[in-house]
Length: 198
Length: 198
Image (cartoon, rainbow over all chains, first blue to last red; front, side, top):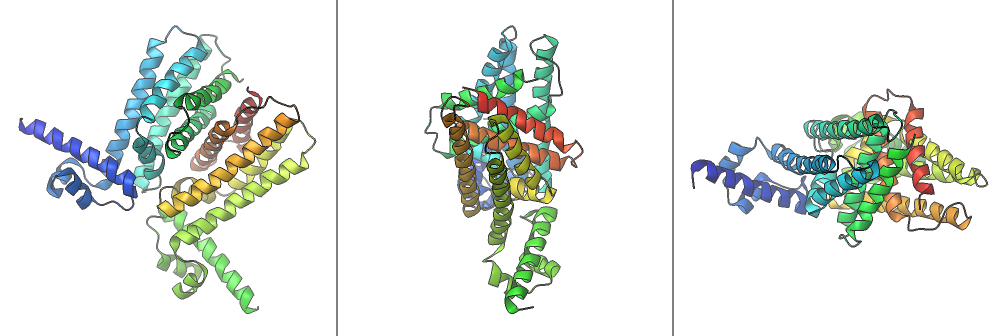
């Protein structure tokens, strides 16, 4: 193993330990010391990778939300020629499959990340703006193709983000007992209704 | 002023100071000492009213959410004989008007209250269950009147809660620049669509 590989592997162990610590005990109750012990990494090495707990929290959030965004964008690219409601279904299925895969990611994104500090809140809201832009661009694309009338879609995008996040969190929280297909179907229902509404 | 009146008035001052402290600096960064100084109340008196910071946070949240629930229920009772979509519009207008009245309440409910501790999270989720039950009961009422087909409305209720909360928070956050009517119209748009959807 090269030094770079060892370092990358150590960073991954810290990411894993962070995800577990921040979601098992909760971010507020977690500590760098315990997390480093779990990862088998010294605190000096921790600070070589992250400026602090907040930086690790945001790096974890970046990872899940980037995966979700790429999954949704890929699904849309693949379904480029399909009708609007098929594209909606493919994109939301791709997004939700990634985000709901492990309930710890839902807890991290929708609970632990919220209200930590001004810096973390700014990070969270910047991501939300990116999602709004993404959804608005897709709605404008659909309007450009004549699939729906043009209108200001920004508030609808905000509503969709709130609804989808709540559905994923609710499902994760309740031990993922309902079939995941029901949760996807509800999101498709919601987004389709807004996609078609004047 | 009787002793009971003095105590009630002191409690109100603590509620005011708590709302301000938890939303200006953020709950995580606030302290009982500073909050008592702002309220002109001793910490001993604080503990006569609340078991700690978390209890004050939850008492504040109870107040805003109870107001919102009563406002929505009253609006529905008044519009009892109106058609479904009129009832939807009246109820959501009443709810949003109360909740968005002061941006500090939105910040408290949607940011500061989230992820504080297991106890606060349980409190937050218990309230959400009450809202789900409320919305499901109204949907079943509409089905019973033959206004829409009966179906399991629970996941739609979850989606509605997420969307409405996100819209209110988004609007508060952006300095309430858009006309509030647009935010209400957006909520009416998707709740109506879901209310009518099979």
